[in-house]
Image (cartoon, rainbow, N blue to C red; front, side, top):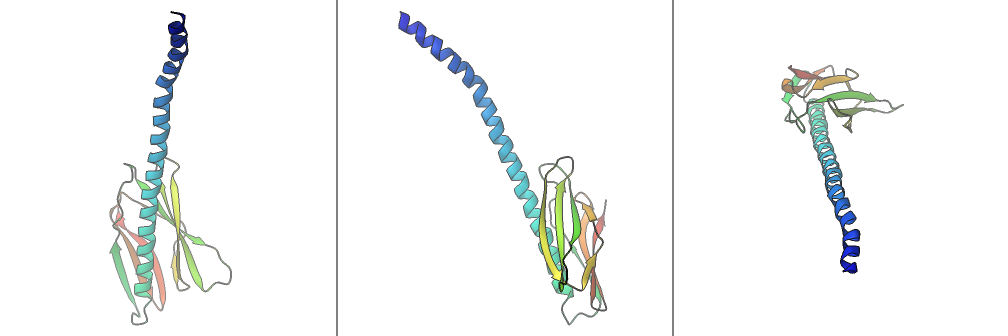
Length: 159
């Protein structure tokens, strides 16, 4: 009879510990998975936006186009994990380079989750520093205007 009591004295605290340990472990694992999923979706949207900007630039930079304007609609999702996000275009400073580097940053509104991608463009392009764009705008688009071998990039759409 003494052995059964000792077994219960050992097993009951272990079982009680498992009642608290398993839900806590599952919660930590799900939070990590959710954060990773959000980051991957942001990275995909940032890569898509950067690719669109680069394609837009290369299209207008062709020698056969002297002046003109091109507008493309972004196919990025309006929400990531049921949250809107902001896209910001910044200049990356470099000295003596014959090209411009754009930093495209996507950040979720309301939480501290953000990703960036770098886009390399020619030296004949410019955009407004810290140009921001909300993902929930109606018909989000990129607009590039070329005049005198100079390309200006901006966002279009209405909120």
